[in-house]
Image (cartoon, rainbow, N blue to C red; front, side, top):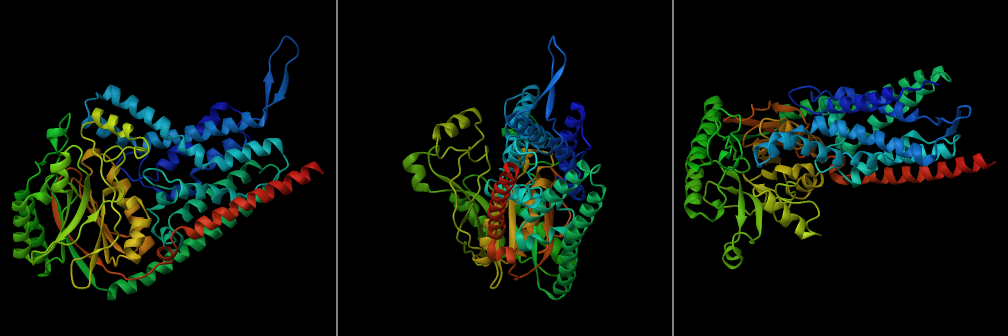
Length: 568
């Protein structure tokens, strides 16, 4: 049997898998390089290390050295620690941008912020032993029943089930990290991005097992490789032919032209230290209007076609914009002059609440709405997913004192009310835009509802990544937008205050490359329109959930069968 007898080698296995998974995250430096191709093999070192956890250990005494077996609980605890270390490596590398808002928008110094970030990573890494608990249980059970056989496909599906029912706060999955492999990603149009997680975990599990048992069964490794090549070949072929068919459709499909403004409002007045930006500016409406004219002029200059829609990013307007008649009148004059509707995100207050409760206690929403050329204002779309720690505090609906205490320490934090509407907003007679404000696009269900029930023609994600400064947070966020387009077959434009601004066609292909961070930018994108109803948009994650539940049942049946055989 192939084993990792050295404890050091096992830790290297945990860390190596963490680094390989981190390579799937997009970024600007190692290991966050956006290499999704490594994901199917990324967990092999981790799984080999866990599969070969020692079963006996030496006991030293005055007598002759002898050995005793590790108990099931001891081996399960060792696998728990392995997944915890693995998760910690991912958190440290892939989410290092979390340290940016701590440093730039609090009074904490870097020598305090970095250890604090490490502590946060250590805590959040406990999620990984949770989602891999089926494998921890397998380690415990197989120690008690050494001859048992667990179906690897069922184990992988149970992990994916936990990934679905208890998503990470950022809601990335192992499947989402294969964003760079556009042919592979197309299967998300059927089952969502979680199905890719299943194949990643199954591939690593099966190959790791075959490598461990290579000395006993040399042919098993070759068979396992061929099986996995066949499975991935089917997925690749489906994506290839889907995109070939898509290219034919797009050539004959209508496009909608979306102009954008990336103003680079950096809010240095509330930052604890100056942001590394060369052309930052203070939030101001005259500059927004000037840049809006520039974006529209670029479109007209290109081919004489004016934009169908102009988008301002999140946080482009001042806090009381919706209550300021002068500002609203100014914007209405802009839309009347250009004959281009504008999608605006703004803070929403009820004046009566402010008057009766005061500004500190009055409910507040983050809302998007259209100002149309005829001066009319659309209904408001209200943000569904407040940003954790910035616009909400976890569990504060159950324990309000947690949020109140947190906001006393971090004065820039706020508490947003949660929206419920998924109806898209009509920006032409036939086209409807579905806003997604910042974190909204991490929730697959909201875009699905907007596409199937809300009449969405396109998605627009209005974001503000100024809090993450010059990190890769925006790029990591963009891969979730990419999968929302594939799952629902709708184009998406992500417009960010400080960048990156980028766009995807209805099949997840990038149609405008990310703009540079912390810079001003204007431009336009022609987004292909699609009215396709995908299988995923019809059934959501239910097929995967049902498969996960059936896999759980399969595991229990196999356990009972193996236990009975062991007793006989």
